[in-house]
Image (cartoon, rainbow, N blue to C red):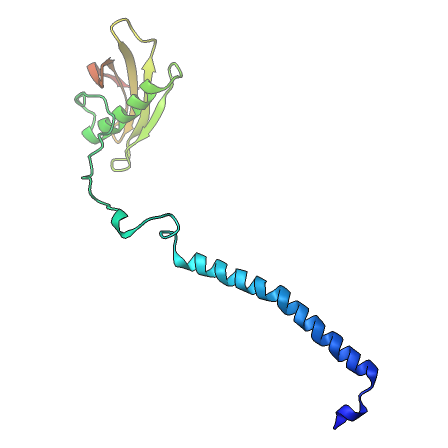
Length: 168
């Protein structure tokens, strides 16, 4: 009934409104379709996009783990130095020997015994491939100096002439 009282301006306004809505639909529909496509691709997983098929299954754990040897010079602990402290000191000595800095000290600490110290290569590499070293040890009995010679023969470093110099 109220259509009878519609004016021409109102009819034109409604037509313009319907046209605007129709134009928005033509713009919004592709955007919604694109958003849905992106969501579907994101949720579908990457395997199908990369050409992986069921025949190309990834096998893990097929290689047995190999033990990794910690680089450490070979040599027995000198008298009066705990073997666990000596292990820590030798690891630090190996790092110091590999350092490019001449005479670079490498600190070490044994959290089990509380001992600590520094490992220091001394002087330059000798003609026989050996280098003197000094290791400082601070443990529950006091401070000690250990001196010796580290010789590299291919892959391993061997410690020789190792002796405790005395208390620092």
